Image (cartoon, rainbow, N blue to C red; front, side):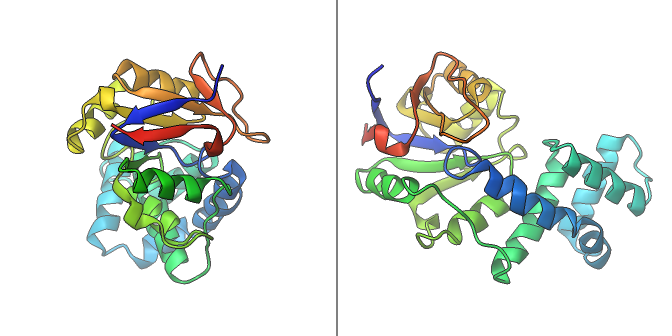
Amino acid sequence: MSPPRLTAELALLDIEGTTSATGAVQGTLFPYARARLGPWVREHGDDPEVRRIIDEARSLLGDVDAPVERVVATLTQWSDDDRKAAPLKALQGLIWAAGFAAGELTSQLFDDVAPALRRWHRAGVRLAVFSSGSTRAQRAWFAATPAGDLTSLFDGYFDIDSAGPKRDPAAYLRIAADLAVAPQRAVFVSDVSAELDAAAAAGFSTVAVLRPGEPHHDAGGHRCVTSFTEMAIDAA
């Protein structure tokens, strides 16, 4: 199949395995947050956002009176299981944002990503992110890249709390509506075929990015590249 050349108003991007190595997220960010889940909840328990996270976790547990220690234990187990639970992702985002601000964390991008993002942005293509990680974490990640602060390139950040599950077509329709873009004028770029299936069902164009050394190797019938240099996106 020839390298994709697409025309789109919006390019919606996954992070893990697509713009950044899975190992950089799972091997660095996850352990950093896991070690701080309990201390963070105890230290910031009076913060309205932390209280909201605790209450949401209690709701998922089915126990609105669950003690904080049970909530922390549950959040820790969800982290170990890599569960896409909104309260866990929100708490991880708070911890990661603080880590980036303190200079204890730095992000990572594949070498082909920043030049492509800048190229597409200059061409008039709008850019947005859709990741299971919280929108706070997404902004912190793209603000601290080796290529500099890239947040000005993006028109939006979406997570499972603001858009919905990444394998649900309705999530992509919500994102398109939020950005006032027709789904048929948007392309979703990811390494997970089930997510691409959902985006396609919502009317998006799709490109699978299957990079060497990454865990996903099934394009699922979607157009496929191994690097952002292999595809072109022109403004619609």
